[in-house]
Length: 259
Image 1 (spheres, rainbow, N blue to C red):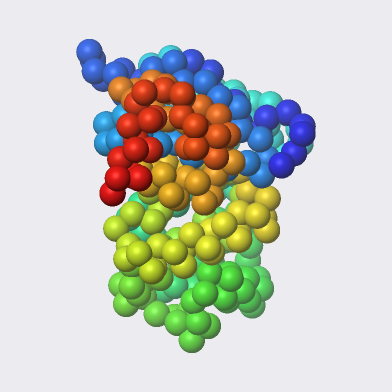
Image 2: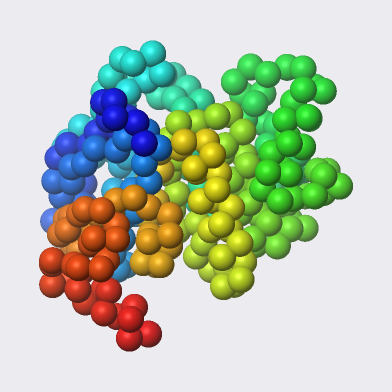
């Protein structure tokens, strides 16, 4: 991980739905190469927080600062729409829980990986196809499936294809929403090994939302525990999970141990 300034800084992030709190007063810094897990039960606010950070939701209050490749720090929420879209295409990725939401299901596997490259200006067909084939290999999809539709893929293969689609442009920050949820245990394990290797190899900063503490322990350096829209505990992942200070975190860890 880098010792430089944070890559992403959130301060006072709050989302209110009338009287209901989506999340309230969330603050943290994320550094290059660092994986931050956001955990909690359903309704804890973790998905709302991810939506705010990825700009899919507008906060009721708070700020998000991002350090660009040239070192300048920008207020993400104040970026013009065109600049924000460019940021989402080039520097950020988003791996969704349901791969069908993150893929073009009517486009071939190779096309799904090639499209982000074309969106940022790549035009040489041979080079684009070579990059697509390279990334299919990196996510363990055989080259002879390059022209197959994602509709013909298993759930685990679709998720790996979605990862390739998100990483092919070389982003610095990737958001992940329950990326292993709904997959068979053996498929989950294979996907987690793949993710851990790619994150380390590429030096990615990641914010991952998960209800699975085992996923958080395997992938993340630090953890935020949310309840009722608030962060009730944060710290190094092993420290929080091995010696939780908050009563709610203690219950979460105990429920896993008792399962």
